[in-house]
Amino acid sequence: MCAVGVVVLGLFASVLAQGQSPVISEVSVLLPCRAHGEAAAVTFPLRASGGCFSWELADDDLDNGLELIRERSVKGCVSSIVLVSQRLCSEGRHSFGVIALEQRSGTELLSDVVVDQINALEIDSRNRQLNVGSRQVLFVEATDVYGNKFSSLTG
Image (cartoon, rainbow, N blue to C red; front, side, top):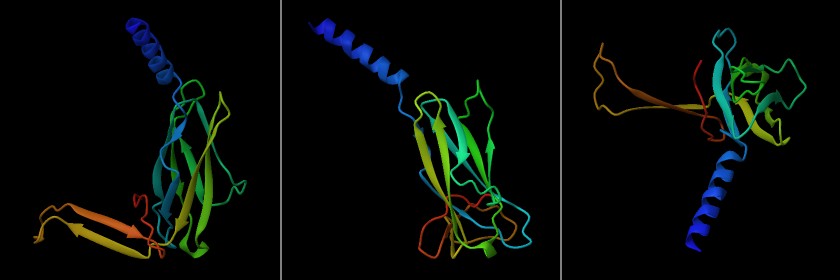
């Protein structure tokens, strides 16, 4: 009876491993907007796992300042994208929906992306003294007017 239980449990574990539920890496993303005249765009990677995905914006507005750069495709499946925000701060706070559609089951995974202005920066160092010309590791955190932390400052 124990051997049968072990076989059934092993079979159940292998079925679970093969049928992993679709998951998206971030359900909420906050990106900073771009100041007028600033050339660099802000980027943020977004990933999905547990299936074969296609990606799209929930908004049909093509001129929204947010671009999806799809990573390499394997048999039509794209597991990750890079969000690129070119949105100007003068355009105000804006929300977007990014959908990862699992092609076999039709499951839609949604990530809410907000592009807004940085309200505050906090810079932290583990060193008490900063010497001119020396390399330092600084930790930078930005928040919006509501106190929400930005997901990325890359760009």
